[in-house]
Length: 251
Ligand code: ATP
Image 1 (cartoon, rainbow, N blue to C red):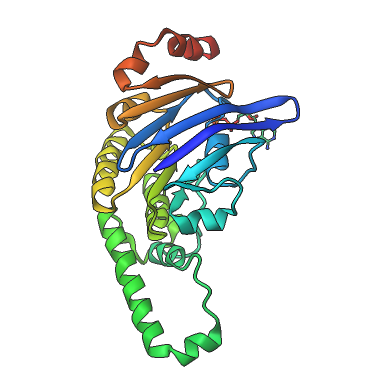
Image 2 (cartoon, helix red, strand yellow):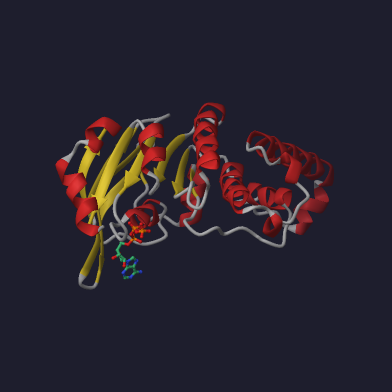
């Protein structure tokens, strides 16, 4: 589904990411881990075109998508969440999701007026779809609450709900369990498995919570100083001496 070949991002004297390659199959849950500053978020930024790569290519569903605009990437079905929550804090939970369903839709007022009945029907469909997402995420109870008033763990779930509203095929989650307590993080793990089946997702996630990554991801990649130092199953990664020393070396 996604193939990146030798992606590199050079910032003046620093190689934030060097020759990153990946092949992700449809339906897979893949983990990307590494010590602080290893290049994980930069890799997400490259895959979603938020930063331009210095070199390398990205293919999605067989098409070369290197260098296309971020909104085109979203339209093709690659969506992401951010390490820092980026909700519309003064809007309700439902409004946050509803807005995301409108992404890439270029309604203009005249065309809306001319086709008012079908627009309203469409709007109802979008509201229902947003409510369905909220129900799956366990957030239906909070639909009319302002995002800022949700507990932190629920705000993180709302971020995922918003990404789902864009109907992604590939979902990139940047530290989805950050700041969650162990119970919340366990529930999130179950939820991500459920979402994969229900919305036919492929998932690539960055996470510092090792238990979370090791239990959830079928394949894991490890970055250190921008370079891929290991790739494999949880068992292989756990016992890899290079991985152990990369983490211990920076502790
Ligand atoms: P963390 O786990 O702390 O979020 P990370 O693995 O996501 O870290 P990145 O945020 O991708 O790491 O950063 C990789 C390296 O690139 C770091 O040394 C960082 O300081 C550097 N870097 C990131 N963005 C820029 C930028 N816009 N300009 C210069 N250097 C940058």
